[in-house]
Image 1: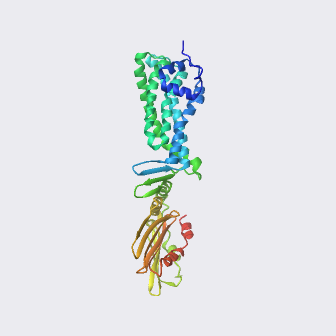
Image 2: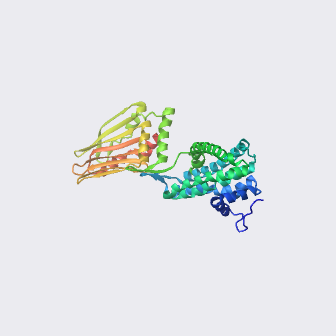
Image 3: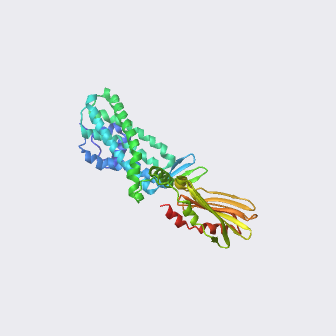
Length: 387
């Protein structure tokens, strides 16, 4: 006769989970004798508990991020949700595959093939790993996820009983099933990466992009925008593939250099180009004994490297009693600024559209004059040439 569960501990998920964890040898006979359907096992138990590790991972990613030894990564909301969904779906798929394997192996270990019983074993033995997944929510407790290995013991105690395999073959039956489960897990991990990018990001990131998003903190560098890094690398790869990397004609750049900038008059102008290698135009401006050079450079496909620099959020600052040097990332572009107030000499430059560089360098009344010279080129004009 099948043992009966006390009426005070009947049909709730919590009661079943507690019982299978704390009293597996007493609980498996109850499970063995229970009438059940595969859909009922999923709807009433597996679909709920399998969501716990995915939900814990989602919260961990958004609240704490991931990292070790100074490296730190925080996924975007879309990426975190997508990863959680993929993790949840693959968890369910893994249980289904393992149940089918259990059912298929049963006759080979003198057991009885029974699809529903096999799903009982696969689902209820997964309880420990699902519950242990909750610990992933707190960085310091994630090591406790190893408690999920208790599921192997649950499998060992439940497999021979529910599949009617002789006790002397229980160990071998369990071992083969575990080996298959490990293979399935490796396949799941291999599939998870591409699926996360395909399934997880595009519904939430918008613009039809499947590029990874988020930030990583790197020691000595700061925050790295992974999305920008990926976009810059794609820009270079696409330019190489299509050949659409020819620089703007030097004459076009030269025509953008004004004849005068405030009191400064243009006294010299020149330009040169190397096809796909880039192009450059520069002019010299003089006023009252001071002079500076204004340059426009098209870096063509190599300009994507400046995009990677912007993704790294490049920033440096050096200052002395009479001078300073600054490099920063402003609105996605790299800006450099140097000024020596004793010599009234310096330079100011910025990248445009991750392709062009405008720089003014030389002597001026102040750094503001060099900034004004750069502004005369018009960033929107250069950005239009990059399209």
